[in-house]
Amino acid sequence: MNEPTTHPATNGADSRPVVFVVDDEPMLLELNTVILEPMGFRVRSFRDPDTAVRAFSLSSPRPVLIVTDYAMHTMNGLDLITACRRVAPSQKIIMVSGTVDETIFRTAAEKPNRFLAKPYQSKQLTDLVRAVLDE
Image (cartoon, rainbow, N blue to C red; front, side, top):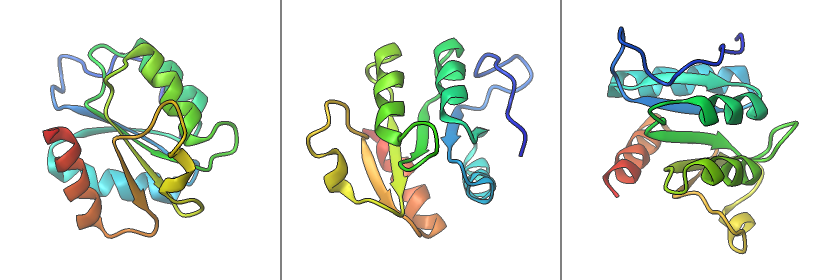
């Protein structure tokens, strides 16, 4: 999957709310797109968390949600959360991981709104997305 170019989170042609999905596994990016688009979201996928943070800082309006993996090659999910929350302190974020559990962020300054352990079922993700957006 190619890296997206940096551009605003919405444009005149597509007014659906935007969700950023950040994971270094292309198959999981595709899976999350297949799960989230039928919910009415426009999904922007990023394999590189640094690219995601740059796109986030330039996006206007901001995405309604970020779904990020924890373990990625160049930056972990907690670092991504911290970087995004410097720009938008109230940004809603779900962190997913198959390598750590919720104890990883217990003492972190910035925490995700929710955590989802991999592997997960599509209904678990859709239910969690709805819950976070309703908060």
